[in-house]
Amino acid sequence: MRKRAVQEPEKKSETSDLEDRVVTIRRCSKVVKGGRNFSFSALVVVGDRNGKIGFGLGKANEVADAIRKGNEIARKSVIEIPLKNNTVPHAIGSKFGGGKVLLRPASPGTGLIAGGGMRAVLDLAGIHDVLAKSLGSNNPINVVKATVKALSMLTSREEVLLKRGVEKL
Image (tube, rainbow, N blue to C red; front, side):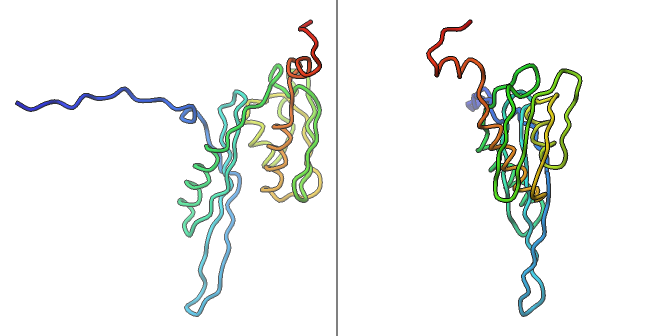
């Protein structure tokens, strides 16, 4: 008589419900004796549209491998951000390299006013109403890193009151 293998219930990880989006793919060439060798880098952003966001830069000799690596790196770097009525709780600015970003809360119905890499990050974070401006460099890698840095610096009203030692009003 053969024993049947008992199937274990699938463990659902917190990263399985994340959506991913490829922001940019770049090609690099290296000239060697036999010709040119191409390699690719892919910037991938992941998020659950509910306050969790992460990004990753994958590099490989094939586009599909670069995207897969970027996706894995992005899922490992997920951070949680505070949201207030589908917008950011307060205005914030951030800089990474040559890329500068400004994020300001907006009233409901305004929509996502942002472009390029910022739009992908804010959309996957679940922010529906925001006024955003990218200043300086338009390099998508630096813009995405500056946006994620700005979102990580956001604080909720409760966190500020707790730091000040004030009870909830």
